[in-house]
Image (cartoon, rainbow, N blue to C red):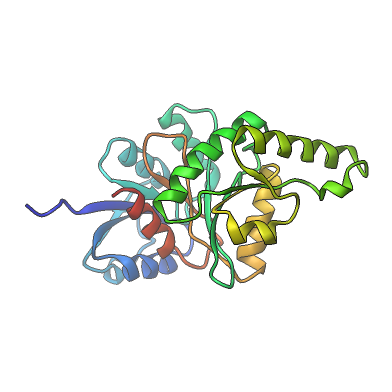
Length: 254
């Protein structure tokens, strides 16, 4: 018997034309459900494998269908982050979300980066959990399982500032406990051999992501949430393309 068609949901708030164009580009092997407010999507622009699902609260509808198993995976798309992630946390029964971003440099080098949310990965324990979950994703996508730990400076910078010293001490401890490599501040070297990069904290991780994608010509393929039972890929509303996030969600749902 043929395998059932997978259903991937994506949210549409702003820029509906952009999201529909990206969804049409990758639809076919799986069905795409577009969650939006009534009247913002031109149904004539939706291809054969696209379904437009209109709701007064599309964020909640997307999360509800994901958690109920009516769709196999979800992508935030251009829905607002605060409302969507708040609904996801409540439905999943967690007090925070852990995300691991799949990024690509302008030269085509892919790697995972975490933490990427400003409220994520602030303790050694939290980052150890991200290492464990990130290794699983790296293996799934054929990336090196070597993990690189970033800190606030080179080892020779010890003594220049207490925060730099604390950052390097945490990185050394994390590298030992997580069977990883302390790459100091040298992210440009770390991406050459490491499939998973651990930023010092969520602020610096978010800055790395935004600098690479929005200033450096790189690509963001989406950031799966790794501490819930369902597949949810976060994406930035400023992203120029959502096809990669849809493909990532579909791949994780296999």
